[in-house]
Figure 1 (spheres, rainbow, N blue to C red):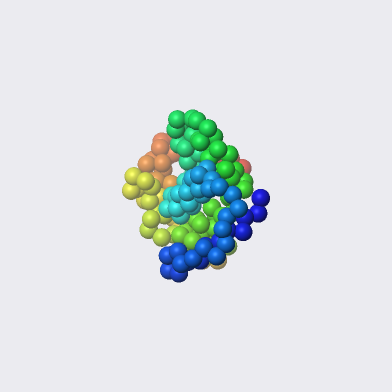
Figure 2: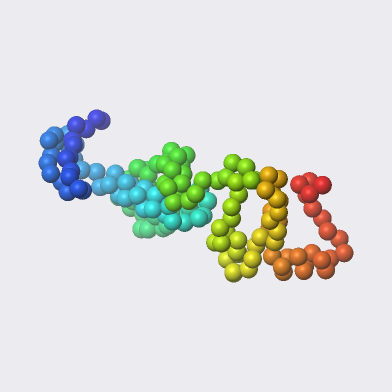
Length: 156
């Protein structure tokens, strides 16, 4: 159904309703839009992978008392696939873009530490062929104490 309803605003204040809606209000649509707005805010502020963030927010939403209203709201919330482009755009407004080459990598202080405050960049060498070594001192001590060290094909 196409709705001709519009609203005029100035500085986020409603100034007029030039055309009326041709349908009754849908509280489920409004709640679904509020959910998406909340999800967009979380995408800007939370570093969790977006599919994980979406799933956890949906699960929290579905943990409510399940009734006809909740069912209608959930039906109006788009799938992750349908809203992922918007969520990634929201995230990119707050986070810097990923570097295109190793030469462009510039790790800021917040990215050089683990969540417990340990240094995570063990070595950073070179400009054009930059080599970065990630780990902690504790990891190195554990590795140096072993007799056998296994690695995958990335370290041939």
